[in-house]
Image (cartoon, rainbow over all chains, first blue to last red; front, side, top):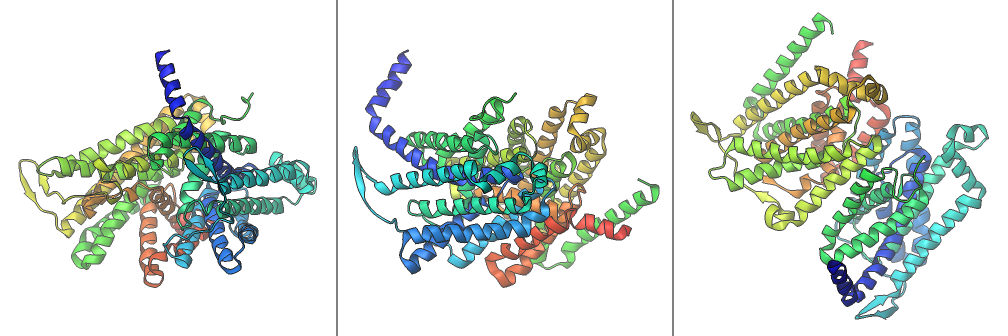
Length: 300
Length: 317
């Protein structure tokens, strides 16, 4: 009991930093959820672990940089980058993943790993090693204890939530969304009912790629845009997708916020570079005790 | 295997070994180093072939074993005076065995993609620890040290030249190859292959599949660590870059390019990859991974058996 009251005292005296880190954690969590939901959608429907997802995120940010530099509009950059990378995703799916349909899922890991190497080095070649910056669309701030907290962070969290909500509604009520869910449940049956399964796969890959690109543009102002930024995020997204339960959309969103909060609280005590170990540990514990994922009902 | 193909194999093995022994005497310095490096990367790739080709588990975490081998060797060479070659190997193997035991215990509970992701995450844990623990590991800069002398305790010592280093690496790699080949042909290796073919049936027959998998991962990790020690000896440094998961990815690439489940394939794959890198670096400088990556993707799609599998099928036609 003594220890508990010690912890309580500590929490009361540090409530400002706890509140700040909670908000930070939720904001990062929403961005991560945007990346991870694309990844988990792609996995759920075609058993593809997309190693190149981080690179699509990175390319999205770079397209955003380019469009922003030419047009000056952040929102145009967001929309264009999403579309361009979605098209690129569709092209990649048709050229490299479609021939691998029906082979061991592990070969798709290899193919997408190859894609990620190519894209990453292409970005290095095109844009050089110096990080670029995306200017945030507005610079309003509000006061939060001793900090001035930018409104933009709150807005990206809401926007991410909006995009994910849109995806959910699309999957639930849209005709094509129903096609996607049907293909996830039973590929052969869906094909028999006249759903063009190969094109559903392409579309899902494109949607996932577009969401990764959108999160790249949204997150660009908070971190520098460089060619290696995808690596860290794809690892985090993998953790989230496994902790949330592979191919489970709601689970991976909950896991994104859970893992990001854990990391944000850990960052109070250790450096952010070391805080990532907390999410590694979360993953290991999940795999040991609930290998099907934390946020799914216990399987029968 | 028939009698004739058996002798054919040993004749081919002898010829290749003889060529590799003579090579440093005729090659210029650059290509001598290059050949040594191929042998070291080939050893790393072969170690992961134990898992990919024989047990059917793709590990994306071999950089942890390789890197711990490097740092283990570095620890021995920096802490023990005078630096001792055999102690470096011992420390390196101990380091990688420790990590391999840890990784094996947890990751073998999972299969297929989940195994690949878990090994990847584990290797990243060690990367973060090594990268941020600057006081011990030198952080981003890594550690540099001088190369120990080759010595047989109590008999004589002699400093390494680039020829003798090549021969030393060749001896270690050849011995490892023969040991791994023996293991894969032993009853233990047969069980591993039956796990690859049908895990449920292997379990039903009564083999403790998990225990076999743990031993397979540890064995694979030990040889990867040995490759790390050799790499540290050749280049006289240990750096966190070599614990990063891109190295594991390269080990997998070597396997796929050369042909999985063949043990010699990974060596061909490493040679092919390094030659491609050398050739494309002339035109693309540091962006060589763009063309090499495209070639790799094409090979995944069109040559799933790798170069060796393709050659075998072509010869049999």
